[in-house]
Image (cartoon, rainbow, N blue to C red):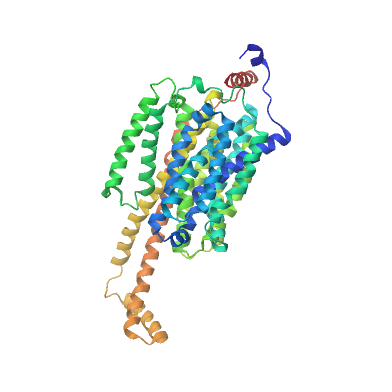
Length: 536
């Protein structure tokens, strides 16, 4: 490229064109994130329709998550090799087509395969959408772009259970996949029409050597790790032979992947960007943020439905209403940052608020109603707004523009892994705490306890008055008491899990001292623009 061309100013989209790019990229990201959680509330219906067990049908979640976490760190390489616009549009078409085929599936194997393909297409939508959105704004306005994209990151996982619950209550499970089709088609048409190619985009195939070894090691390492995290609880962890083997393959694959990628000239994933201190420490905070975001979205619905008796739709609405406050707060935080506000105090405030939310949730009564959760969930939403957006900005702060896509991809992968680790830890922690609490509750009820005897007699007499069956009434009374103990034990276990989430957020706060931020001068902004021109 000539020096004359480099001297030309970069032309950023504006007006309607930029608005359409913003809407398209955020919609694509939300669509991908919704599909990570929308299936959760439909598992019962899907298992009945396909004639398989809940454990078998849960593979539709596992297969999507594995494909997602493999493809996300590769998006930078694939976008450079095929051309970002081409890769983005093809990924959207793959996602949309796979969504249709999921809705048309009539067997377990069929829907698992199509969910994996959907995850491959969807993984690209997250990181590539963010990179395209960033390029639609000047460097000084990119915190605004982060705010807009942060809306999607928070809205997606929260919207999934609400939308899924409504569909299951009013229609059938295939619709949870079919709703992606009109959105995907419209987003594809808008992407073709309004997203511009970079100069020489897609013309680098001859100069790029495909890192087959690195891609294979990534697939083995990350794929096996995600499998262990997703299936560990149902397979009884290391008592399962497949979990032991996958754990070994994950460790070997990841270590070999890191060593190999750091020592070749054209890696599939440029891990050298992790030498940037901001990005390295930001990934730790992003991991914890993913842990809290996905774990809270997992624990709260299970608590609400298993213990409190909420329907799937009621649970989704309870979670969704306060989250809307966060959605509208994100752009405000973005504007503040674009005016020079340091992201570090915002991260600290966000983490403190998330800890407060977790402790508020850990103190709820077993008799709470839907409205009682509004204020704790509102604190959660505000905390997310304050920490997610600055973390998105910090992930690329200090990187060269040509490394934005890699930094974004790694950051998004870490967030997904944080969520996977969080759900795996929560599952195991809840099971252990439930067993402990149940044992304690039972030990506090000796057989000769007058209160226990009185309670059983009251229940027995009640059943006798209804059925006239004295023998059966005693058995039913014991069953009611057993369910009461089980409900109380689960309730206490979930409260313990909220406390665990709070501890994670507090423990990492001291690491903020390693984050740095510096307001760029006008000369530095111009240098960034010039570097961006060279990267283009």
